[in-house]
Structure formats: structure tokens, C-alpha cells
Length: 66
Image (tube, rainbow, N blue to C red; front, side, top):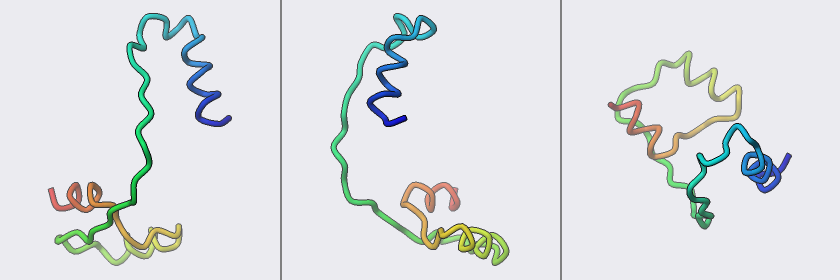
């Protein structure tokens, strides 16, 4: 199911009736990446790499450092 179809199904759902007050489309933007300051356990880095994850988004790096 694509995003538009998913949102349309939620809007029509009785379960969500009167709960959706605004729908806004936010334009795409370039991803921003950062390396966390805190060291990452090599086992975690290897597991992430096995899933094709080789870098963190800025908010992820900030969360790791927090």
C-alpha cells in the first residue's frame, strides 16, 4: 500500500474519526549524516553493517551521544 492509499484509509476509518485535524505534505530534503562522538560497540557496528547500515542520520548520532 502506498502512502497516499494508507492515509486515505485512515481518514475514512471510523476508528480515527475526529482525530485527524491536519494533514501536511513536507517537501523532501537531503539526508544529513553524522558520526556519534561515543564509540559504537564493534559487534553492533558489524550487525548494522550486515543490514546495510554504514552511517547514522544526525538525529540518530545525537541520540547515541545522549
